[in-house]
Length: 260
Length: 318
Image (cartoon, rainbow over all chains, first blue to last red; front, side):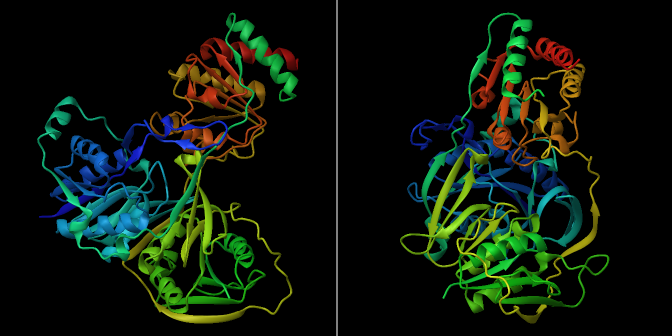
């Protein structure tokens, strides 16, 4: 059995974060959570690759109890089964701990030929987890991929490198990180959502992975998270007809000296 | 005595990072993949050239910088470092993360500040949520820190030029050829300088029909502005080339005037227009998120507002 694993991250919906206008402190309570936006494109790319490899697609996530929502989504989007490595009681994980947990679970899943991660997540966007997993598994890593094809025992990928692009090949097993240009993320239909409820899921406590204490100890501590406060005029132009609004705007812009 | 190691395949970025490192550490080593630079930047203690044995996989025998990751990590692991700075490029992101995994240490990706922490160890700042927040982290011991061009913090101590030239050390390393380069080519990129534009008219998903795109083009013409768009307009609808989208993963702009037509105001977009002098939004939805960061919030239909505005600006100019 050849397996493809797609890693997804459960993150807070950043659009709902509120910033205290005085202290700048970010309020993440009562904020909904979601699968990181670009992970949706990655799941679809993984589904296609798993089909070509004629094998199973396993969705994998790491997080607290709330992250179960990620399993539902990855299953609705085409994974055959989904696994969550569950963190100990709300402890914060950094990239070091996350990659150790995911790599250990990938090794447990067994017969994995291909691991797909997104280049970055919508909260941290650190370009970190995929390459770390590759190194921990001792597999080659191909990052920032916008086009991917797999063929038997090897993959070919086009990487975006700023003003250039690089085409590379490597043997499987390998870890690939992709950017959203990899392809669309179709919205799953009702049938797929219902079918997802019947697919197998597995919860694995972090402690069951047999990792050493150093492997599960964070390397950095977060000491503050402060929101950005924009200083803008906030002049609302909503009264009257379109002509009146345009006149008001043109007058204001002329006064600002930006129409010269 | 604190020591810093710097790596970037981009020579200019490497020089910036060397200046940053010189402000933070007593000795600074620049590591390069392949031949050492003929004119190493000031402030260096030594240049260490990792010279792969055998030729690279590229068509011209080029060596991918990523192929030197293990050699770089092993070198730093053996010699010990307090700070490891890597240029935040596509190659650098990969190298930094893999090196952090090999060494079992932390990674700060895209730091915008790096300094010694008051209680010992180090402290960094970086953006979170596409720039909606700044996160401060602290750590003890070594970590890998990536920094982008122009983001490298200014050195706290001045770099004294004219010191003894850096020593050069050449180390042969085995070549990691697991990932083979098949080809490398320039991308076809439309030549547009959004980052340097003084005025920008930006099209959002609220511009619902291709006919309405003409309204935005006319307005941009009247204003002498560049036409830009949000990510989905370029990548999902493919109405404009990707070089024209503004966002965290696209271009960042700093115009005198930014005028958003039907732009909802997702944070991934708004972070990249933060440095605009005047921000105008036109949206039918009075609750549009973009209005949260606007100087002028025009509540109205862009199909009415845009042509009238074009007319008014042309009238003013004539």
